[in-house]
Length: 481
Ligand code: G4P
Image 1 (tube, rainbow, N blue to C red):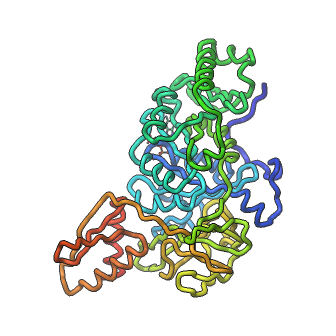
Image 2 (image 1 turned 120 degrees about the vertical axis):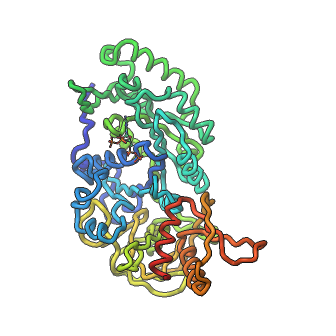
Image 3 (image 1 turned 30 degrees about the horizontal axis):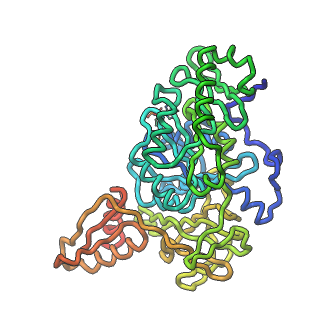
């Protein structure tokens, strides 16, 4: 039996990871990328889990850094200050950290009040999704919507059932809900030992190991983990007879009921590996992350419009725009285009072709994201995300290519759930309105629908989240008068 600290400390030495080459060759760099997003319903614990993952990666050193609002949060870097002034959030769009020699890119999927089409679009840039479920509430509406997008795009989904420290639903019942509501079979990778106040840890079914978490006196819960095979007689002593008996019973049931994990099925989005834990107490986050870096695929070939695909090892740089964020500050009219690197190596200052217009673009000012040095991004590899200042030439789905032009499979549009009708108060300003709406819809800010049975020409606007209307209104006012 051995103990190991569950509390995240310093990022592990990449060279310690087996089979990972530190060579900076394109293939090795692409191979070590893991680009993923967390999908969940508000309040399931996404912020908390994100923070714990960043702590493990050594990207932040203080719990509360992600969550803190206001001045404290913005004190982290000059870039953040810039963002604060400009009212945009770049650094939280992608969070990069290293773990066991892998370069993790955690893409932020806006939720809560800023839920919008961007939330869905972000998933087109991710190679894996972590589906976070609250053990008390089970599968919730926003989870279902986001999961459907993953299914549609063939994105593999790893499930993390959170808040096991609360008296939630029975684990079996939760798996059953995922299977029936989302229609995806579950393979539990680990299994909780107890629940609520009795939550003691998780059992890793793949290595026959128990990660046991000790609670300290005075209610403080210091995470610690022990590993030993399940048939080690000392476990009954440690967990207590009844918890141990229950665990063995559950495991027998799972072994009898479940099928073995099939990696190909997982990569095809046909089965989801499931983990249990408690992000807030940091129970089970370490064992999850360790398995997650093994499970999550590195960047895969990106499908093109002509039904081919661009492999990440292709030597020349290609990428596509998956999100455009306009500056809400009228003094700064520029926008930021977010690019997912699909192949080749990006180096700052390189000249690429904007495939749709055939024009050349010099990529001089790629933006900095959180958890790196303060300098501009000097280089990036497949799976990485670049933020580019855009004077208004880039559109969603646009491809950038260093060599032979490529056209990637189109950016999907997502069913709107909110609608409003617009018309100008002053018909004299109709042209501006039409121009503004046309441009903003091209940019993906809103969707336009024309009703051919109505006499008037003003469209119905559709959006995935109501915030999109607020942004649109603001921009129509400030940019189009
Ligand atoms: P979100 O980003 O998905 O919306 O969720 P967030 O992390 O903000 O978490 C929502 C609430 O759930 C927070 O409580 C958070 O502390 C709590 N939470 C997250 N993970 C766990 C967990 O594993 N167990 C338990 N019991 N609670 C968890 P809050 O009261 O809204 O905020 P706070 O005052 O704790 O910050």
